[in-house]
Length: 230
Image (cartoon, rainbow, N blue to C red):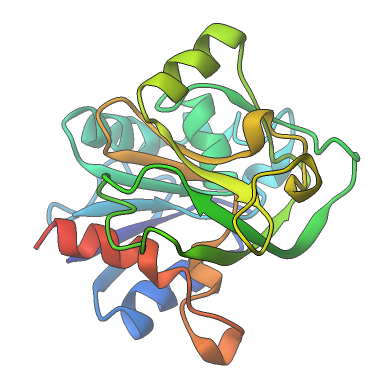
């Protein structure tokens, strides 16, 4: 399997993503600079990594959305290609309208960097099928604008369609207001598009793919897609 990791000016999790999918998961990967106009032909999945693309000026992801490579990323996704947007990458996906909603400032108006817990809402997707039903994932977050927001009709639609994949929860899997680090509606931490091939999530699974780094729960997400594409 081959991942293409898009690199924007200000990306800081591109190497984390590359290392996770190659060293920890045994896949191929290639960096793609944002000014390129086409993805490698053998790409199976695009990763839009975390960081501060273009310094997060104007609005998170708003400038990166117009990078030359995004035109091909959008075409790739619309043809059914798999795309993962992590943290800043999630923000870019909403700006590119590949995913609904928007990411607002954290409710406490502070940058948050800590481990959180995730409850998997839908196990029947390309990104979640390998996650055990009762497994609570421990994954790091690192963001200042991770507060997922959408209008009431959009929230109802994505909930009804099973597009919500992850919710913030406590260690025991209870979805509570106290377990919500940023104020996201319905504790939403990750969603996918209607077609099920584009994932956006604020937590960083690529940072927890090796026990030497503190945990490997992120591997469940990557392995789900790897096994799906076998």
